[in-house]
Length: 117
Figure 1 (tube, rainbow, N blue to C red):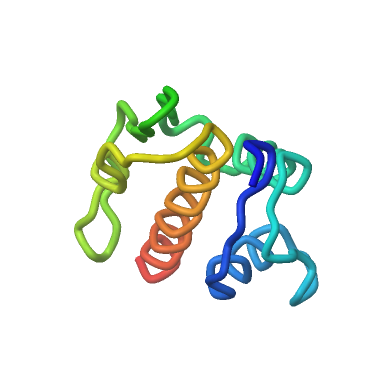
Figure 2 (cartoon, rainbow, N blue to C red):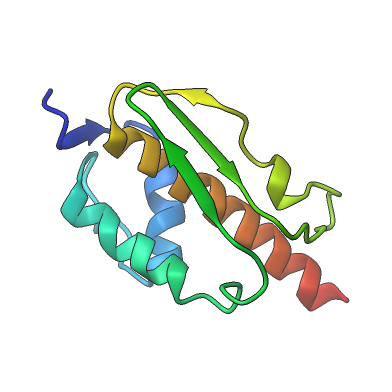
């Protein structure tokens, strides 16, 4: 497979993004391209969280790290700073995919925590 496509076999991860984006169930296929992922990145940049922390994705050819400067605890006690350790990846698209998925998981947990309090 070329570096502009990745195959995601976990339907739950695809559904996570579909819900976040307001897409219909089944909108995303298991083959993800930059065209699928960049609107999600743009949506993340427009969340209500953008003024609360710096969201940094550090990508090289083999690793991705996600970090932030302000910690915002959620119900599980997991801080955004801790959501992703350095992860080995095959290409930049996979790195961004992993960062997007981890951000959405954290965002959903934080939103749930915020609405309970």
